[in-house]
Length: 206
Image (cartoon, rainbow, N blue to C red; front, side, top):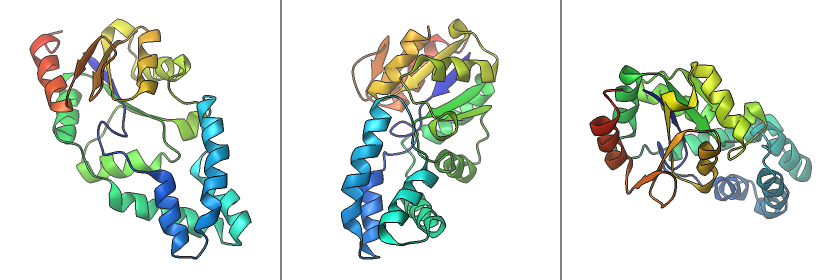
């Protein structure tokens, strides 16, 4: 059995990106620009497209007179300090790697965030699919089909585990979809630990 899993909220606790930007800019005395930039970026995100971190940093830099490279670097370091693994996340990934192939599929402005988590955890996945590279976001079906192609699996050969509304798009791609911490999908569980227990008991033999 192969696994496609989301990142934010499932493997690590969700980080408030705009709150983090406010913290970064507050230290520089420019927190007021965040709301205007967030309004535009979220509109693009809601249409199914991603605005990469480097583009966000350039926009903020243009409004504050700051260096976009330094701004992005400071933001990355701030988010890195807030990356907190969810219970069972690392153990589940290690088990899943032994059971089959694993792809992490994330709506994220920077691929660097799941990379940092995976590196710190000592886990290597078979594919890392991020919206800042694809420039497309879940729940768009092509995101999930692309992930399946990357691990060489058909929909019935993989399980998707997610935790947000955007993850329900996996159902449209024909994937058995397990939701964690919310209702929906084909199955739902309170925690990743509970979902993992069910998968081991019912799907591991496949």
